[in-house]
Image (cartoon, rainbow, N blue to C red):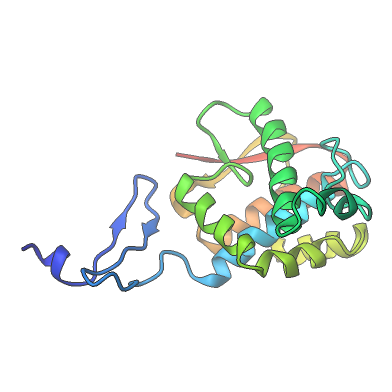
Length: 198
C-alpha cells in the first residue's frame, strides 16, 4: 500500500490550488482553503452581484436581491430561497462577464469547479444567508463593504482587465485587486471585467 493510501493526503489541482481529501478511514484532512478566503470570495460575489443588479448600477437586468424577490422565490424554493438568489445573480453576472472575456478565462463569477463547489456548500450551509442580508443593505452600505474588501489596493481600467493568475486566487492581494477593479468601475459609472489567467 502506498503512503498516500495509509495516511493523510491531498493533491494540487491543475490550477495550483489545494484540494482536500480524506484519509483511508474516510476522515477529513486539512482543508484546501481557509474559511477567511472562502468567506471573502463569497462576500465579494454577493456584494458585486447586488451592486450589478438593475436597481443599483444595472450591469445585468435582475432583481434577485430586491425587496420583493423573496416573495416570488419562496413558493418555488421554499427551503432554499437564499441559494436561489445566489445562483440567479451568479448566472446573470457570469453571462455578462463571459460575453466580454475569452473562453477559458476565470473571473469572480466563473472559477474552477472545485472552488465553485466549495462556495455552493457554504451558501447551502446557511452562511450565505448572513452574507446575503449584509450585502443587500443598500447601495452605499454595500459600496462601503466593497471598499473594505479592496483595502488599500487601487486599480483602474475599463473592460477586460487582467488582475492575476488563477493559482493566486487565494492570496489577499489578488482578492483585493479584484475588489478594487469593481470599486473603481462602480465609482466611475464604467464597466470592468477583471479576470485571472490560467
